[in-house]
Length: 171
Image (cartoon, rainbow, N blue to C red; front, side, top):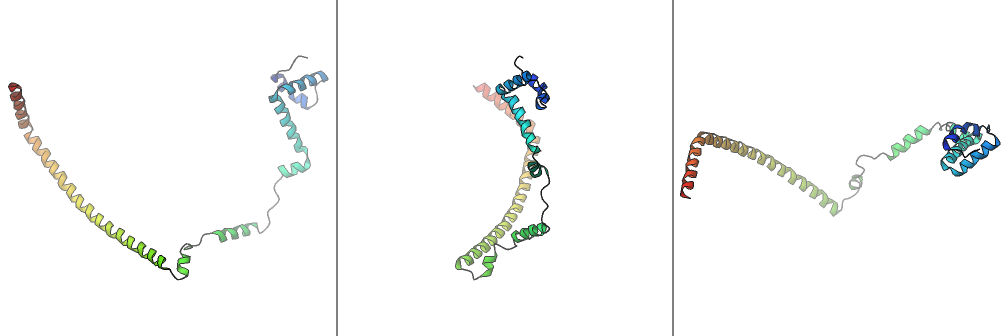
């Protein structure tokens, strides 16, 4: 029998697994498996599936896991509750004992910084109102200037044309 190709192996694979090949076909099949890693991996993969016929392995892999203890949910919820962060957990050491000089200084600094930020915020608010008035005045000034330019446009163009003519005549 001639050397088998991969397509021949794929067609006869079921017969190989069922031991329905003749001696010569089986020898050619085994020779091809010795030289072709892709076909060999295919046959070995099927052999690994046959290992699931082992009842102990099938019990471990295919069946459902054992049932959980009756108090499983209660134990998990108790652990979750125990690990939940408590409010003011970071402030509790400060509130618990007597404060040191550094802690008083830190609290005073935080209070002073808050007062400065609040007072500057009100100044910025008042400044923004003043800048709003300036923006209105600037907009009015631009509108008046645009109106003046529209009124004086033809006159200024005529004067500019005369100026160009005069300078051209001089040079």
